[in-house]
Length: 112
Image (cartoon, rainbow, N blue to C red; front, side, top):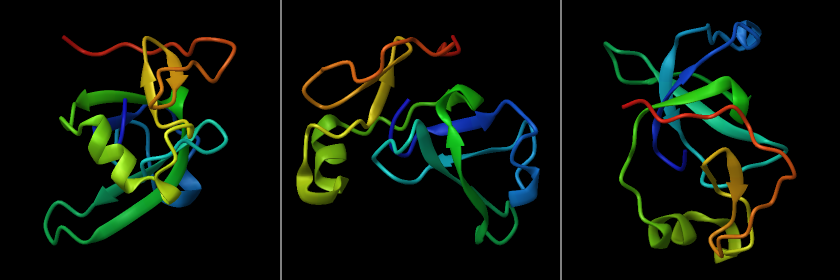
């Protein structure tokens, strides 16, 4: 799970932000902050920004990978710092150096 991936919200915990369980959108910020990604949902008709919120990693699942490269992510990170957490692979938060930054795995799977 990374920048610009299409993701689905797995819980109803974000309804105060207008985001409901099952809503799909994109990760719109390259870095992970406090175990969250910035989720962005657009209106399907106008394609305008409809809702956004910081959503916990464990409350998201990947619908479609964006194909964004590590170089693209690095270019989008503030200060181009490869030590910032920015990806989730095999359930772990990683930086661009490949270092695991959390002590426990999230329940995270990629759909087939």
